[in-house]
Image (cartoon, rainbow, N blue to C red; front, top):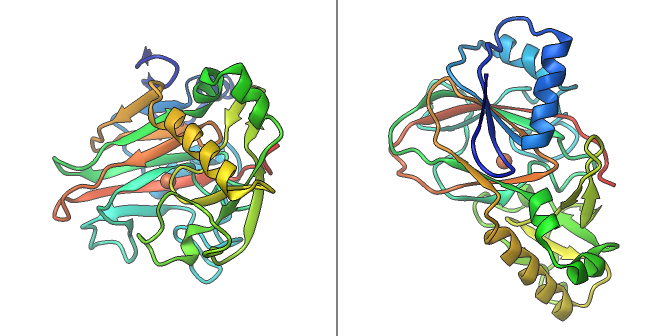
Length: 280
Ligand SMILES: [Fe+2]
């Protein structure tokens, strides 16, 4: 059963991902994922093994040991990362209760993840929803003039995990003042989805970035213009979590955002990310 949620982004599917899924069924799920960007599957009951078995259908798991990313740990990072607040039963749970600005996962590495999924283990009332923005729709909404202006530009991304957690916010880098630590990775500002061939505005919204070989003044201006387009986009899906929800998203063609919430509220999700390619 399919229930379309709104505009271009978000679709609910009624399936049991703990059961074996045929190739035809999987192809349909993947097709809908690339079309609607966010797939919501309610009332799942999954062990880590079952979650990974389902996730592996989309490809190999993103190797968090290749770079400093969420959950990185001495070359033996788990494929399942706990995103949790008040989750004492887990040795490590990340991201706490503070605001997480719009981003796509791993954008600051050479080969960012293609798809990510979150599975809700336990979510108390008052916990923050997650909001996704369709960045293909954002690109399509730009004026022809702006599309031409940005067509060959590249972004330089800086890995936020080299800064103390919570201290990095959306900032256009001014090299005269401060160059962020860690490696600098360059990606096209407009990337092409390898399956749908759609164009995507591939901006950092949450962290430090700059446009390659662009003077600071004009870079900031363009950065503000594009961020306004992202912030004002109507092509969003906001998900209020319930225990058992499995939400899968196209990490190439969306940004996701989480509001801050009360530090006493328990919120435990498990994330699996799928390996991706170098953006082109
Ligand atoms: Fe994320």
